[in-house]
Amino acid sequence: ITIRKKSSLSITNWPLMGMLPSLLWNLSRLHEFATEILKANGGTFAFKGPSFTNLDFIVTSDPTNVHHIVTKNFSNYPKGPELKAIMAPFGDVLFNSDGDSWKTKKEIVLSLIKTAGFERLLMTTLRHKLADSLIPVLDHAARNHDDGGVVLDLQDVMKRFTFDLTCLLLLGVDTECLSTSFPRVPCAEAFDVIEEAIVYRHCVPPWVWKLQRWLHVGWEGMTVKAEECLNGFLEERIREKMVEKHAKGSSVNDDGDDNYDLLMTLIVETERLMGSGCCFNSKGEKFVRETVVSLMVAGRDTIAVALSWFFWLVATNPGVEEKILEELDRVVVTQTGEEKGLFSSIEELNKMVYLHGAISETLRLYPSVPYEPKQSLEADVLPSGHGVGKNTRILVSIYSMGRMEEVWGNDWMEFRPERWVSERTEGNNIINDDDVEKKKICNIHVPSYKFAAFMAGPRSCPGRKIAFMQLKNIASCVLRKYKIVVVDDHPVVPLPSIMMFMRYGLKVRVSSRTSKSK
Ligand code: HEM
Image (tube, rainbow, N blue to C red; front, top):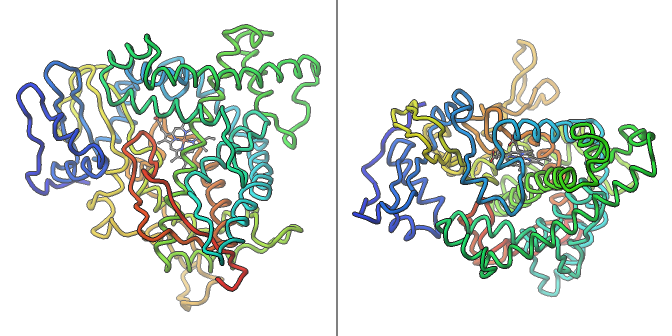
């Protein structure tokens, strides 16, 4: 794929200030601005910061460059020390680790989530949380629909839902953020404050936030308190589990896959790595806590924002909504004692090919993680011909990658799940168009350096399968039960952030599909 240079759109490189004025001017529409610049410059652009700072970086959306950076020359492009400092409020987590520390953490994380036990735990926890919290909240909103209706911020609902779900999966405790009273939950709020602090640190020179942290003022002052709150919450859970482990003695983890306990497994694995009883000291406890935080960061907001964009795209594309509902009517057949279609089995999820396409299409246009930061170790030359100096910051714009005409065609701006669906006929027989039995409908595979929502190479997302299981189950349950209507004139735009949040949330009204409003 060669990305053609479209026009001469460029950014003025001012003496002393470099290109910073244009960047600041366009900050509120950062993703769009980056995409315009990248399209006009063949997919790669060298940004010059003010001459008195160290703010130069290269931004790219060129799949060939991305393949080079994240796979072929992976060892030359770690996350780098700057990201580590920026993300320090979460601790020494997987996302900001490099080298051996990353390998150890990754191995442990994979041993926790790539198991049949975890998959089963996910399915039962999801079923329980859908029935006990998401549906009651949406039912409550739908009951008042005829009286003008309750306006819900669906993004907030999804964030609360995924926080509860993640804590249940990882720690075995229900934080109950999502209920009709929309309570304030300190550990969830602390998590949000830390995330915002990380965005803030990306935007100001390091000496500013370091000084603020030292003085305990501004965002940094709030962040110190938030870290204490989140760490206190996690440490309490870890200590409880340690006590349980010692009470159980050698029978620990004898429950098999049916009663998988992720925190217990993590403690056992940590002790195997660092020695028995290590989780009672600060080093072992820190390792366990940081592994839990890594999985909270990985699996909470990524899912919440993907669902928010999905519901918005579906609500504003009635043709797509109709096709998803048709597919769900066809494939959701099990009657498990509860309402039909409330919760789907793995076999049913696998048959939701069009829904899978709609979710992939959502992530193409609105990837939960819009940028992937890297920093070169040594000088290099990218396949596009751009020179990379030693210690140069690189930003892969995943958002712009989903909008490149050369990759997605000239209808790249359209939300078209059909892009991801292939209808092959079985055998060589020419078949009738409506001979569905013989038609093999499946999803089209797009290489991960083109569809980069889950990134590519050794650091690609190991939670992709789990993510689709969650997204499809939540999406199918909600769509079958409720019609979602976005409030008139509600502005839906991305927040320029490390996560693809909607700036003003997603204000909607919901009505029950079983009532007259279907
Ligand atoms: C829509 C959902 C999701 C999306 C779009 C997504 C996307 C990504 C991306 C882009 C990365 C690379 C980030 C980086 O290197 O900075 C990543 C890494 C990762 N993801 Fe996901 N993710 C999703 C859900 C999940 C879930 C549900 C889990 C686990 C339960 C998970 C676990 C991880 C882990 C552990 C990493 C770190 C990999 C490493 O550094 O080697 N993700 N994800």
